[in-house]
Image (cartoon, rainbow, N blue to C red; front, side, top):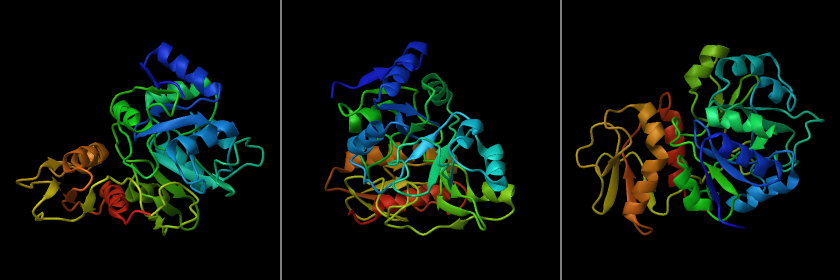
Length: 317
């Protein structure tokens, strides 16, 4: 692989990224949540390349990004519940897991052998321009080595994948900062991964809270593996008084904390800062170091933050 191109967020950069994608190359691109590693979802070699570049387990499915509902309906079967969710939250940080159409034309590696496909319409303007320029559905898992901290800047992408992918399209820092919520419509709807759309927001549309799905070694969607988003340093959670030698990451008023997810206790700010703060804490602590994280409320975006922290702290496989 040649050096990874660093493309500007202008018409020339978008055109170059789209050409690389149409040719089967891999291009990282920004969404409102994190940077995705884009590849043509209809090209088996490109999808295989995503798994190889990330070192991703082949049984872990990929999310497919499309520009709008019409494009999504060409790939999957929507019922009334799915359409209501799409109307409320697309474009935006919600992924729907739906029955795959037999004529969808996607690489079979996308679904990792399942009969449902995970679909999302991103809200980031640059992602939208890229999807329309390349005119292909794009597989787009987080643009980082598998199991490591997700990237929210182009520099994060290059730190983990430089030389393994064709290019990164630089759209600046991501605003949401945690990956999309993944939901499987049904009775009741199943929350496969908490994320940028809260369970409470979903309940306001559907009239019922989604049921939290258990983790599984054979996931139907990303984000269901127990260990993920892991720093090199050891991580301890819900810490109000760090032990000697621990680097403390605060939330809300935490005098003496080395870093903070949000000094004011703002969950949206904490989500946007989460992965960048974990990266900086990991850098300061070092591979044999220890990181302690203050408690974060289990409500709203706090559900997604705590989900990522729990997976980051889980025993490594």
